[in-house]
View 1 (cartoon, helix red, strand yellow):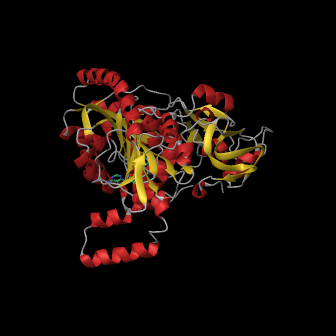
View 2 (view 1 turned 90 degrees about the vertical axis):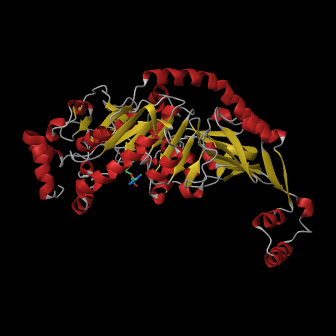
View 3 (view 1 turned 45 degrees about the horizontal axis):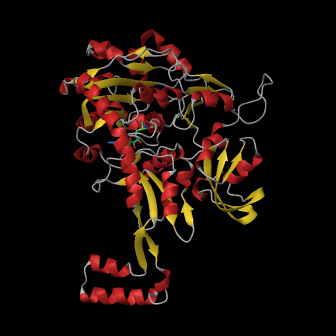
Amino acid sequence: MVNLPEKYCENMKELLQEEYTDYIDSLSEKTYQAIRINTRKISLQQWEKINPFRTSPIPWVENGFYIEDAMGNGQNESGQQESPIPSRHPYYYAGLYYIQEPSAMIPASLLPVTPGDKVLDLCAAPGGKATELGAKLQGHGLLVANDISVSRTMALAKNLQIAGIQNCLVTAETPEKLASVFTNFFDKVLIDAPCSGEGMFRREPRMVHDWEEKGPAYYAKIQKEILTQAYQMLKPGGKMVYSTCTFSLQEDEAVIEWFLDIYQDMKVCPVERKEGFLPGRPEGIAAREELKHCVRIFPHKAKGEGHFAVLLQKGDSVADAEETQRSRESLTKEHKKQLEDSIEDLTITIEDRSQKGSFSKKKEYQRNKSDKKKGKSGREKFEKASQGQTVQKADMQTKEFLSHLPFEEGRYVSHNNQISFEPLWIESLSKLRIVHKGVAVCEIKQKTVLSHQLALCLRDEDFDQVINFQAADPQVIRYLKGESIQTDMAYRGNVLVCVDGFGLGWCQGSGTTLLKNKYYPGWRYQ
Ligand SMILES: C[S@@+](CC[C@H](N)C(=O)[O-])C[C@H]1O[C@@H](n2cnc3c(N)ncnc32)[C@H](O)[C@@H]1O
């Protein structure tokens, strides 16, 4: 069992009173493994038909399931077949689910995101909640997923790509910087705040050391700063969820009480009470009664590690919400036209092969050297360096291909010979540190190179050449490991590899039955 700091035990005794010993006993029990189905890719009805795991529903999230006996491929003590390991199943690589601690599924489920919303996840890495918020958008609107840590945003961007969330922007910014760009912009904001992590002690005992070093007071200060900036970014009428994975009143109810005192147009919203949800504890800090609407999960009362969450709203929303709905309906046609126009306007920079001989690397180097001597500007130098290339409108074949991709709202942009799909509203954000945006679609070289990320947005019906494996086919794991694919028929060009109809990656044919594996090396099955 975890060795708990004395001060922490005192706090918990005061909070839980006669339940304290039940809480302590629960720390010796097993933790729960769970998955959350990605409804951007698959409906719950479809999932039920292909679910390879032994699962049971999580009471508070419709698309969340406990995994029973996920130990390997043997049999458990009662002779039943054990579930496969979720992180090693091909459906995981196809982004059909996210592996998540059950109580951590609550915050995103409380935020009432609808398609078309502009949503911010301010402390988003590695993406447990952002992937669900993106799924709720169903390809419409915008998800900005931010984290202050650049290294953690790499995992965030990867998880959003695997989940097929195309309308997202991943930034690595301070909340202050973000607020200077997105003032009163978002319909919905999620703050899954950095915290002392008391709800993680059973699963990750090393969190106890962090608690001893920093503790609730350290985090409460940061949480207040983050909330202040989040308020600036939330539209009037917009909704916000604040959550932590800690039990400390100081980081939960007390932070919200402080926030409501300062921002008096913010209100606490009641939420549907689900099995396992306990109310907030305003009485513990003599705070306002509405804080009872907060949700608390304790490991001795529910099958989860522990969480705190509250839904808040800014100002009076009714008129705003009706107006937003009306303007969204009229925008759908306009967005479609914008997307089509962006394909028409697309230009691509291509190598002008006729000039190759007359514009060698050596000559280019000499030219640049003499430009430097003459003190030529950056722009002039760029034009020289661009000799040997021509900029031309995308050809019919490229346009045709783009118009059939399953993107409904956004625009196609090109940078040199690369084409990407971008969500709306992000044209002029040069001030921000952007880690990832939209979907990299392809690179036009002698052959068109399609991006791995694009494959993860596609179904088998979206592409003309497809190899569709069943999940149990051993070839699918070999493909995920980077091995070549042997087929019965010959292929030429790009072939989409799917598992049960869901895109995994590409392979390339050269007119034979042995196809070259194009699975992104950094993401291979280990
Ligand atoms: C509880 S974790 C978020 C987990 C994430 N929401 C998920 O579900 O996968 C808190 C995150 O806040 C980030 N963070 C810490 N201080 C921050 C700040 N001032 N602004 C934004 N993010 C911050 C941390 O890097 C960390 O990734």
